[in-house]
Amino acid sequence: MGALSSQLKPDMSNIKEALIFAQRASSITVQRMGALPSIPTLAEIEAASQN
Image 1: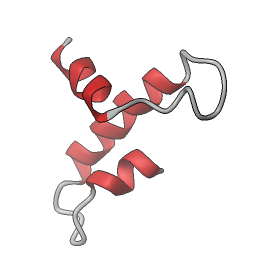
Image 2: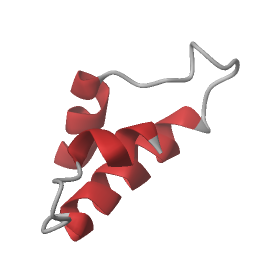
Image 3: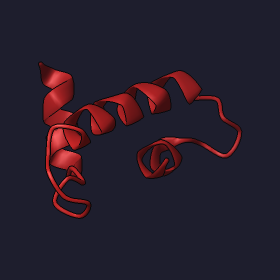
Image 4: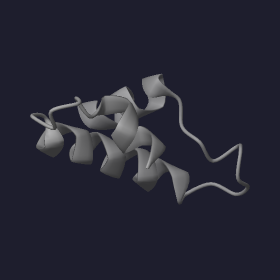
């Protein structure tokens, strides 16, 4: 929810882009152990979008 809400505009005009961003963040998160260490940085999410 954090990744989604961090990108979503108040009028939700970018819902598709925000959902894609959140999906990338969650795909990184589930590959790691632990609560705090699993949270990806913005740079990691952006790098994932380059692949």
